[in-house]
Image (cartoon, rainbow, N blue to C red; front, side, top):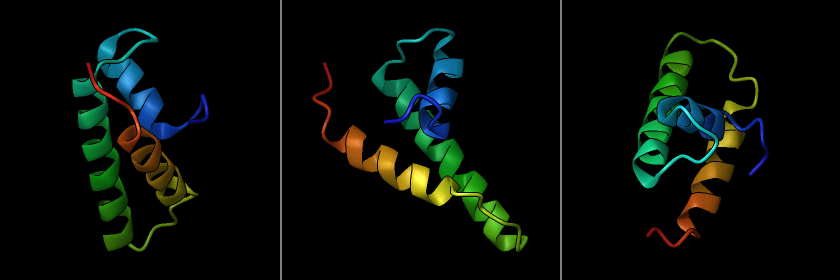
Length: 66
């Protein structure tokens, strides 16, 4: 995942560190997904957020959570 991926950055902010835990990623995925839904409902541009969300879902699905 890119270092500037919106899901990663949001998870890092929630964790207050560079190493977010599973819970932080789960919350971040939900926040970004809702943000995209609201932008779509308001007919606002997504600026590639949908692509970043798809990338994060794909890569986080491959992670073995401890």
